[in-house]
Length: 310
Ligand code: A3P
Ligand code: EST
Image (cartoon, rainbow, N blue to C red; front, side):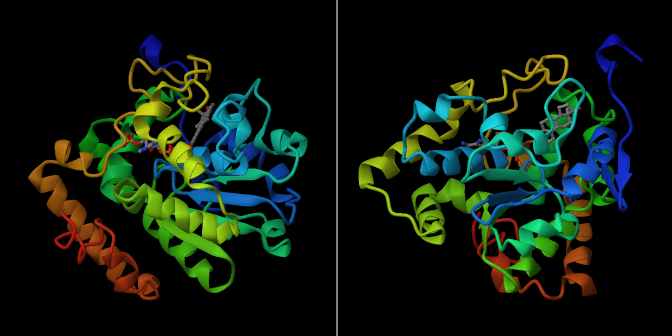
């Protein structure tokens, strides 16, 4: 084990979901978390645009005031519910100190969401992303966030991902589980690719969902401040203030490329075929039958939509 590997450890398990051991230890506090009715939950599978969506929402909540949105790092402005690490305040501790209305980040699969969010009928915004780009982004994240198990080669990591053995488990079950939640409650389901393609339209969707209106100049400021180029240079948004013992941005920056389709620069033809095959099998699986093709067809990563939106 090289020096750079210090701190890497295998994942633990939470109700069958692979998760950081620290997070598993902190679970009792998360399970007992008291949501407030005006909490807004930002839910994603990791590497799906969580930080982007968080910055957009913090800007909306502060009416486009850039200075207010520089008040602290994104991981403190939008606390990460299930986060727990040595010598850092836990997500629950941060949230208890945060005045309402709070923005709450989680990567939990829907079945593990603390019941309080349901009891208080909190609004939720979910963002999904092409799993091929998720897995590439996650591969770099495993390298730079050094508490992760060694990801191995990309080929090996693809197998880990397809088997649902990356942190937070199966992407396929995650996107589907949250999709089904739309039937029950106020949930806005967004796609990273749509946000890339037409951020104005997507931010307008968010505003409508929140029942908020902003002036045109404010909307323009929000869009500018949350663009990839501006966010990657913003120390309050790009995670560079995380201790380097935890995240090594010289291996890969947290805001790495910020595009759709980077998988094309990484997958071999054979890996792509294998991934498509696995994807099709899982989306045709009985568990996924509730996910209407139309729901995903507009998105560039649905197997049936891919050719419609190159
Ligand atoms: P890449 O690694 O593909 O660049 P999360 O915040 O859920 O961890 O997701 C991180 C991914 O979102 C990274 O993807 C990151 O670059 C991308 N991202 C963050 N901010 C973005 C922005 N403003 N525009 C586009 N992509 C963004
Ligand atoms: C995991 C997902 C995510 O979206 C953000 C972060 C930031 C904090 C990270 C954590 C994570 C992964 C596990 C850690 C943690 C800091 C310490 C811990 O070991 C790297």
